[in-house]
Image (cartoon, rainbow, N blue to C red):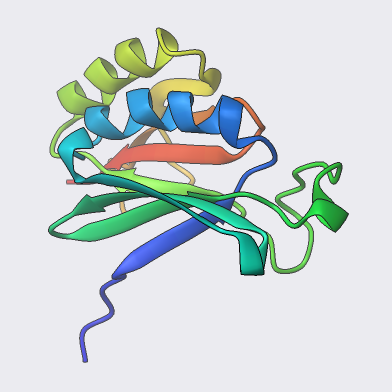
Length: 141
């Protein structure tokens, strides 16, 4: 088996806020909105929006009502610390920095080289979505 991720589902607090943000973000990362699906599963108290790409499925899910007011904390056990997308070049990281800056993302760290990370030449941008979920766009030589 190869360690390749098939799909990722992230629970967000407010689908009315999150879905429009991801509708802007994911096309920047190579997803085509023609492959976007939305479903409500009342029996599971779930609203899911899926973005499908031949190499990765990405979905956002509504929380159960019992957790609707919980704050995002990436250091909580079981939580997503951050999710990194690989860029083809430093120029692509820089371009995506400009683009995610225009859709409401909070830039945590603008693009730069991180000599403390491996491998040498690790060049990345860090940002958060509207609910505080952290993402990275990285290029390594």
